[in-house]
Length: 63
Image (cartoon, rainbow, N blue to C red; front, side):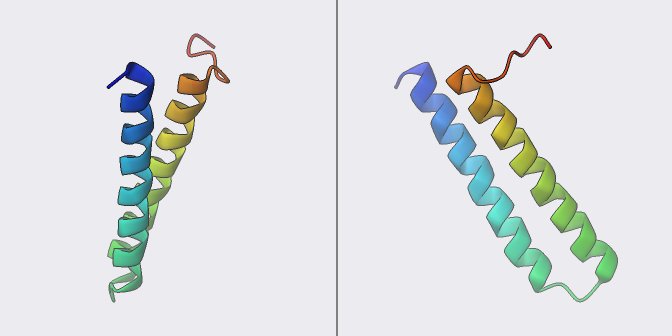
C-alpha cells in the first residue's frame, strides 16, 4: 500500500469515526455528554480535512 493509499484510508477511518460519534451523540440523554461527543466528532472531521488536504498537496504544512 502506498503512502497516499494509507493516508486516504486513515482519512476515511477518521470520517467514519466522526459519523459514529455523531450517531452516538444522538442517543445520549445527557446534554454535556452529547456536546462532548459532537465536539470530538467535529475535531475528527477537521483533522481528516486537514490530512486530506496535505495528502493532495492543497495545504502547506509549514504555514
